[in-house]
Image (cartoon, rainbow, N blue to C red):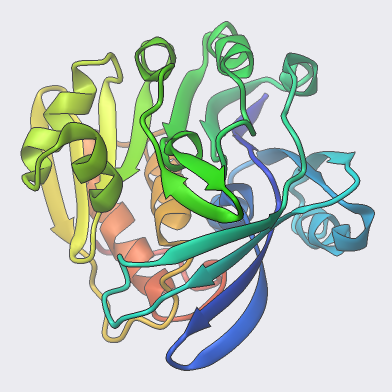
Length: 282
């Protein structure tokens, strides 16, 4: 029984911004597992990637993360471009895809919480979400990997026909402000979290440029990132979600939201996954 298990592709991310271009390991599981291990939790990962990128597996195994990895002909590769100073504005191109998960790939794992962190629609089919829900654990899902579709190499938002069916199966939904505006048709993030809650998730974690908004038990909690300078925008949502889910194992939604804002703010100050000290005061 793991504390938390992450399901999602490894991604090879080429990140381009005003400072230049870098190639980094990525994927929701990659950022999330770093958070879980820094918090002293037992984490597992279910992922798919090419043999050429197997170093990403060994890196996490060395951190005592249990890896369930399937070798695929190619890894999911993304080119992430930040054209302006607004780090919530980005253009993402897909140049490789590691294929769809199957229910059999998640069958052997038991965890208190599962987080589905997909990058592109088609990565995690509805039958895999249902298989995780059937385990009677808490199930979290990041909506980005279900509304981002590959349109001739460019990832674009598209309505998700299975949204109602999927969201009725999960407990926690992660969404960012751009995704929320697209789906809920509102710029008011308090209205947006209530829109998503009506589909069934008991808790909503919403990220935006200024901080995190959490909806739980009919209440909304908002906390700003405590950050001096943002140099590590990529992975913000994945880090935030993992921090919230891990803290919620033994804390209230309000405390988990405060903790999440502090830890994510620390991550934003450096590129790559969170490798700092876990906040003791928040």
